Length: 345
Ligand code: NAD
Ligand code: WQD
Image: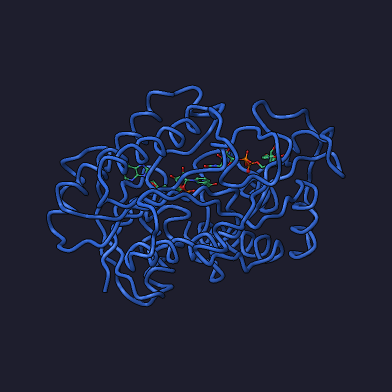
């Protein structure tokens, strides 16, 4: 069984990926410091998979605390590196905190891989590296741009660090996955997205509004040059994103990668507007959402969606879940989580 270190494995995408890894016969070793997740997330993953998982509470930006994971586990087949801070707005106010956590954590992954002879790494990047692209859909050939936030820039710089390192170290393999907009939750409703404080992202804001935690959703901008005037994004189900990591690791452990540095878009290939998301959410969950139109949010691009050709042809990745699946699972998770919180009080 291939042992895989999963940094940030208690978080949103990480927890779903740990489930997919176990279901596909990999042995994840989760590393998290719970800076943006709950201890309970580990228990909930265990409930889904029906087995206990190996877990370390450690800070990946602190090499001494992180090294224990490598020292105590032999023959690590690869690392999936999710651990990072990800709040765009916070990164504008606290750039040092973002550069330090996100870049030092990545550097530590590389340094410890070198020391413990781990040959494969999957890195969580973001569609934000494309900035505001001139052409849509964005393919992997679309030039990257300097992202508008320090958070986004940690992803662009992270990719560049790996590219340079791979060039100098031909026996080390990295695959970069550029996620578009992962939303939704595990079909069980046991794990899902749980942002700290007021959500920045659309779907958690919708589910929290539906639950009554927020008074209303502000739709940022209805004067874009799109069919209904609201911005388009490529929303992709988090379970599909999780499965893509399994395909990516399989490619690495089977040594099928043709280059030692590869990068792929992870999306559905379809642009969906904010209004379409709201409509799908209301319909599939049979409820009404309170929302108003507000001015555009600074830094937002009008449209961003992926060409999925490369991931489809090479990784054999194809998203399977619909917008309705995303909207219903996100609501199932939010409702279940909040109801349980209420009942435990
Ligand atoms: P998340 O915050 O839910 O998960 C990240 C996890 O990493 C959390 O559990 C957090 O506690 C942990 N973590 C952070 N810093 C750490 C450190 N120094 N040491 C140990 N653990 C640490 O975020 P997510 O949505 O699951 O995102 C996972 C990755 O994907 C991140 O790198 C993020 O930047 C990237 N990404 C996310 C999205 C998205 O929309 N969710 C889009 C593009 C890229
Ligand atoms: C989606 C759409 C908003 C909230 C960000 C990061 C990106 C990646 C994914 C991490 C936009 C609109 C939102 C709200 C709204 N993250 N919206 N009201 O901005 O595409 O991408 O998350 O790596 O790097 O930049 O996602 O969910 O914030 O917004 O109208 O309360 O929903 O304007 O059009 P975004 P989002």
